[in-house]
Length: 82
Image 1: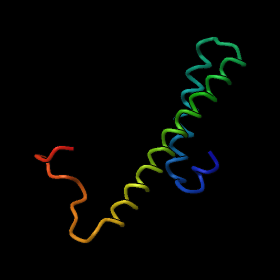
Image 2: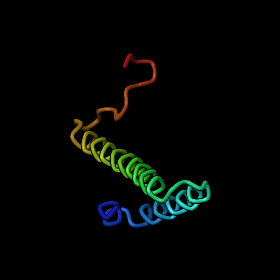
Image 3: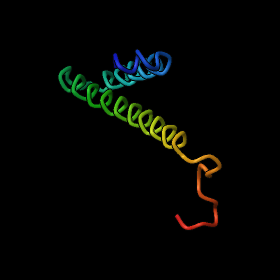
């Protein structure tokens, strides 16, 4: 979470707020504390991996567009085969 906070502070703040609400909801289920912590860590990991993977993919896409020859389309025309 620290890495996300350093590069995307607002997104990290939103993710932490939502994770806190999820934890509160889970705690109302009556599950044991150890189970809650384990589930919370799994959910937090899933959220972080997803956000960072999407961010990495977007950065790669931008880099690919920057290295394309001038005038090259950024995406193939809709009628061309992929």
